[in-house]
Length: 513
Image (cartoon, rainbow, N blue to C red; front, side, top):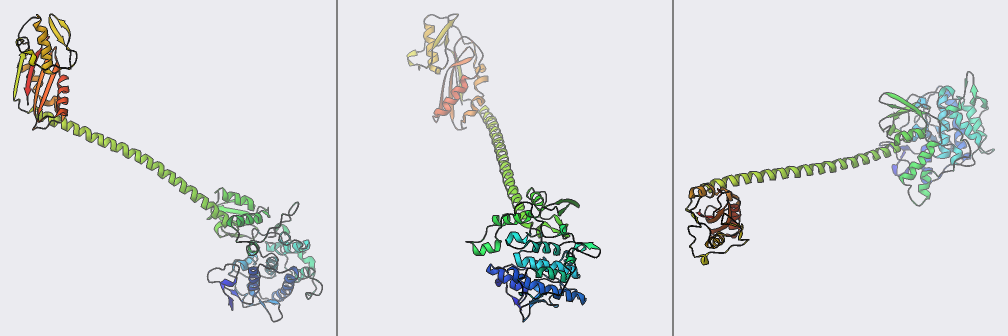
């Protein structure tokens, strides 16, 4: 018969179960209720167990003793079930009760039974398992006799060569802690065998039980399972890590070696190992070897160190995620700037190409526009024109004279320049013929490329009147068919920027496209 998972306080591996009526079932029931056995009850279970284990050892039976292999008999005593003790246990808490040399799956003799019984007694009193992070019983149960811890430290020596093997001596040593008459006395035995026997001495410095603290005892902390049952709610992960760290700190011995990249690092005590994990020197895949128990497995498989490795891994992942985000943002910024620059360059290239094509095409088209009519005249010859009909232009009209010839300012209309010049010449200036011929003007004005940028369509007619003096157009009038003020202004500005053959006299040319 087995107990269902929901009745247990400790989660079980997939496919595992607890045999009903076993000591493990009783311990899990107590743990689930937040209770525990007192010293008298624990000794009442352990002393008869020592006696039975000694009998089994003398008979040559080699078994795995752990709480799941102990079954309650009709008298209320827990006895070893050969059927349940034939194979190594599956449950983690049961495996923690095995001697280090038995955890490989090979049962051994009386020395391994001494360790197993000591581990079972430790769990009965403290509800904790033997292993890294275990604490001295008196830290968890104030008032326990110091002599009990001494006996436990001898039973829990990790090295079998320095561990006692006399189960009856262990029974005698533990019987003294039960009230008189509460537990039947075991057979007589020499308790000094717990210190030395024959050719070996017991070395408590190699015990799994942490050494006695120097100075005052640390404050008693509640068991996390009990606090979750008795307190207001479930303890958070931070408090659980803090409690586990405090338990690990109780053993200052440098007992852990880390195998990383084929090399041994250490030994470290528990605190130093936790610091190395927190500093990301060691990861969850690196192997930790406990030099006391000779257990060796990856950090992620150690219940005592795996939570800290997971916490450090989470920090690395968060940092890596932040770094990745920063890299992506920086890359996006660079990419955006690069794309913008490329886009601007492409747009600029397109605009430049379009402008070149536009100017070339329009220049070619304007160059090919037929000149409908052109004429050139010297204003002095036609000085008798009726100036009252000429349009006045803007700007400063006459800015001086040279050899009796008036010098006109720029910015006037073609008609205004003529009017200003004729008025001055009528005063008495010299007369003469035009010095710039129509062909000379044609070479400048008849090529329409100079106003190709003005966007004049081929269908538009253009009339240009330019009054030229000293190589520049001092007066310009432009009309278009149909009228277009923007095109007229653009063409007039282009004409004013042209350079003509230089002559001090004013000449007027009219060109039609």
